[in-house]
Image (cartoon, rainbow, N blue to C red; front, side, top):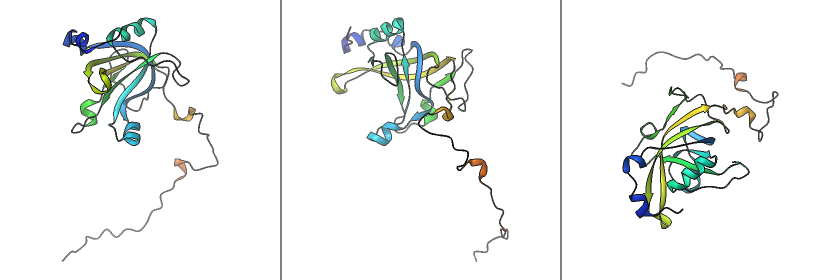
Length: 185
């Protein structure tokens, strides 16, 4: 089923701004925006999550007209990307999605959401005209129901070396400071 503008416009506007999908989180940038598009393409910072979908949520995503991405080496299931760009003139805090636990309590930024966490996302949809048109998303909220915390120490592309530099090894040397006021006259 392909979504076209006429079909999209026939949907209730309140419903379009109140979509929910459940799935498995991959590469969640929900506390801070993903900056890769800024660096690569001079794009905009983007809050986003790649959401792996089971069959029921996959069918729902197709019916909503979302772009379905196939499973890959890094995301082992069909998925959609739900995102919200930080447009010029807006601050991160103005567009940042709410990030909550299963009881709707805010998840602090220090708790990073790792791949394989499960939950739901609330988002809106809109029609865009570029490249032949399609359905875009606006991420409003991410609810984590089962958390796999992201831990940088489990990053297999980097190694730990207890003989190398550590933050704990930095010693601040005290220096003599002249506290007398500076006379500019």
